[in-house]
Length: 244
Image (cartoon, rainbow, N blue to C red; front, side):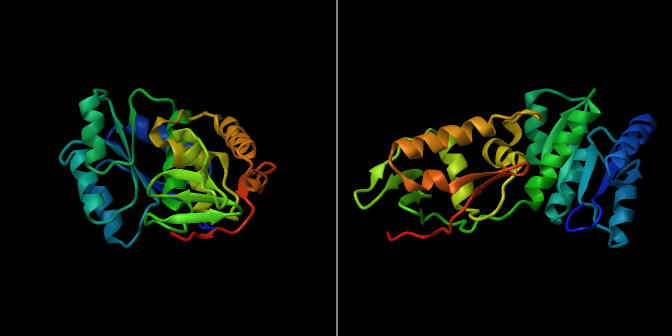
């Protein structure tokens, strides 16, 4: 559910067995499912004013194919799309993503893996927005994060903190979403996106390394990244714009 409203997933798949099995599985996981066998059915659904939260879309459909449908959905500002296809060449993946798909799952697939991809796309679609999207400088405690330069410094002397790209990306998530509990899955999506394995738990290791790097550099901000039991992590301090 999103804000207490059931999450609706539209499955557009011409294979009756796949469509029925997938619909049953997703319904068991708590989703509302609309099963459709082609683009015409999806168009009729959207014409009623209904808007699914996500579309699972088969590439190889009779009539209008999934790529064309995906392109139309993206041009109309439609819901996110997870493309289902038997095509597994890199060029096909690139083509599907360029047409606007949010993720891509090859047949045959595990329902569990597809579910993890669906959840990840929904989290990205409904995730907390950064407090600042334009390049700038943000300050928390004695730490200054330069978003344009992707650099981090401490104190008036502006001593640079040597972070890896992964550690910087993680810190960026915290300083652009301060005082909010961020789940491990959200942090994984925002820092690694489609590169992440469905059951990756490296976020705990990355948070630990980030804390140690900040602590070793003498920053008080290390103690501000707090663990929230059974929920994730939070930067427990306000963030403000830093002087240029």
